[in-house]
Length: 192
Image 1 (cartoon, rainbow, N blue to C red):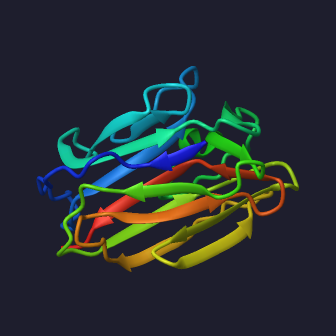
Image 2 (cartoon, rainbow, N blue to C red):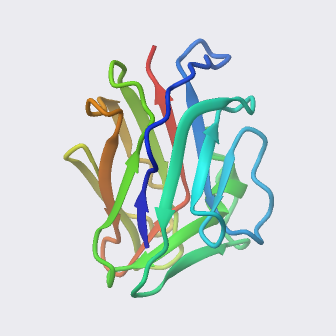
């Protein structure tokens, strides 16, 4: 599976209620899994490959998320109802339990966020959790890499103050750490 973002779209600033900048929450999910919580953009691996992102109030951010499904290896989505309740303040349990998985056969999977304001910086928080000793995540954005096992561990790498390029794009890669890569969610916030 390959992730990429569609053409840049003009940013329409929408300020979140906490006084920060524009925010979008991405629930990487499965079409047949439970509905995403209010304020989350449900992005189904087996659904549409182009999704416009809304803020938690349902208003357009002007950002888009686009991905291409893997043409080799084992990849897809799952809903792990047996995961324990984690009670995380950033990612509800229902979001953690829905995940995309991918093996190492496709190698690095390209990802990017576009339609961003090139004069702003962004924070991107990710979430990965797995119940197999082979579950993990390696993610690189703008040359910064985080890597960890996600085995019985809620792994939450945070990329702080990332600047998009002049076209409003932040790009990188995701992959597994040993065999399977797992990824449940992103929260992207535009800094004021």
